[in-house]
Image 1 (cartoon, rainbow, N blue to C red):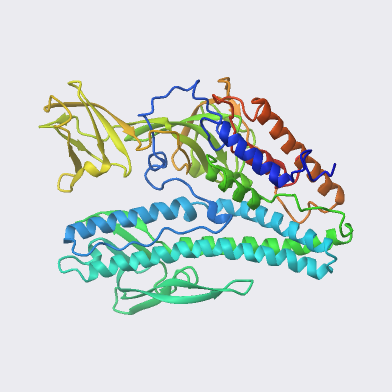
Image 2 (cartoon, rainbow, N blue to C red):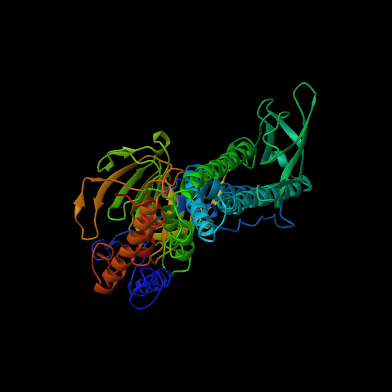
Length: 583
């Protein structure tokens, strides 16, 4: 039997595809690798926590697929025509808030995944190099095959970043222009564009095209900001600002503050150019490093391996795996992407975490994925603050397996009107329990801001019998009532309350493993490559054996079988095929 085929004659890729699809079909609940067992965790479906809540309102669900393949940016939005002044200001605030959240959860807050980009770029480049070597290519041709493929990968990732910037810049200028042409409001009532060095607002905001050329020769047009103003001593300020032109030198650093309706409070910083410059520079440095490393790697491998000795036709790179996961129903794409980027995870330990903020307490269960985990793992009872940790912490969870309480409210209910003392989260509902035994469910859209008193009000008189009473408690709900897995980047300090496996057994600690990163010094010998191929076959056979048996560590825990069903194939193959074998 050819080692590249199963006994039925299917290639490894076909076997993987069939196995993944069959696993999806057997699972009642599919979950991005989480081993939560519904029969062990009977949590009411009404209690749920949306990603925005778990992330502290700063961002929604993490989406890092842009670092692996082509992705679409959130399209730019423009305010509706004919809005009143206050309505236009409110529309601008909400649009800016959504854009800030989207940019944070996709690109701006995910700089630490660039090490994973290097890992996947090396894997892609090495595979292409061996293919060219097998075809009798010269050493220089082998080098060119490897680096050209990496350059094409860079085009995909860098274009994704720049497309997101373009949509953000276009949307910002649309909002500014709409405010500027309105009869009763001005841009500086909500969008203050200023130079942080002079702390002076700017009075011209427009777009200009800047064309850049990628390493493989194609060009891309960046929509950058063309700004003008005057400093506090009367000197003119002007310049073009964006990912290519930078933060500028005069002005020195452009920033946008989104303000409240009466312009007396800065709500949040929005569209800081320097963030985009920094992450683009890091991205380019990462790809330059891989191209240089592959040159060294080819110098070493070329003289040690004879053409045709290494068969890479059935080896799957991390990007292959992420792409294949995208085609499987029920697979949590964000977790599959994290694993493809070699972010450490522990699929055998479900974590229960609690986030205690001044205005709310949130509890959720899922899979932790710290980009730089502590050497001794993570422990129950310990509080971890991501801001003081090396790297980031991602968390994949079922929104219906979470709960939260909200404490930012005034106790008195008068004529059925409830007052929140903090703006409610968008896309979130709240269950208000009254001291008189009434229960009302409201959404964020039901509230009206009372800026004069600093509260948000909602009328629940049609849902309760006693309208003059007090608030007893407020529960946080999510709009989703069926199993839905999301991945978020944790920003607030969290305490680990429990670690469990799929059988409900509790543990006090959990360690997090990843593969040895691809570098210019591994996968040089024929023995390394053959070991990789053998391990590849062993793991796929094990996956299919356990799938057919309906048990084993990959499938334990879920009713109907399939604890890691759907992601099982991705988890297993990523763990060994996409990187050097850990032995």
